[in-house]
Amino acid sequence: MSVALVMMVVIAVAGAALIFDGARYLAAERHASNTAEGAARAAIATGSPADGLDADLARQAAIDHAGRLGVPATDVQVSFPSRDVVLVTITERRPATFVRFTGSASLVAIAEGRARLEFS
Image (cartoon, rainbow, N blue to C red; front, side, top):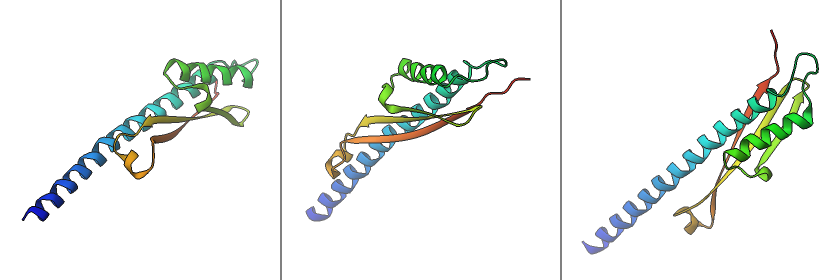
């Protein structure tokens, strides 16, 4: 009876740990997604109908937006797949609580935001 009880407690604690770290990962993923989308929109907002999109200015606007939301500049990648599209990739890192025992010290979520420069 005691062996079965110990096994049930271990399984219950492991399940709770996965739920806890899973929720932290989902929160990191949502934050990365929202930040990437907002940074892409901030980058596009620097464009104009006459001048189009200045890559350096747009990149800096995206990095500044992400920085205001707590994402370090090293975790922000800005690319331009075409001359009127901005693609922002955010890497969100959160410390792991229970998954750490499996060898991973952090939870890493990556999200992309894309925006297109259009004028009507």
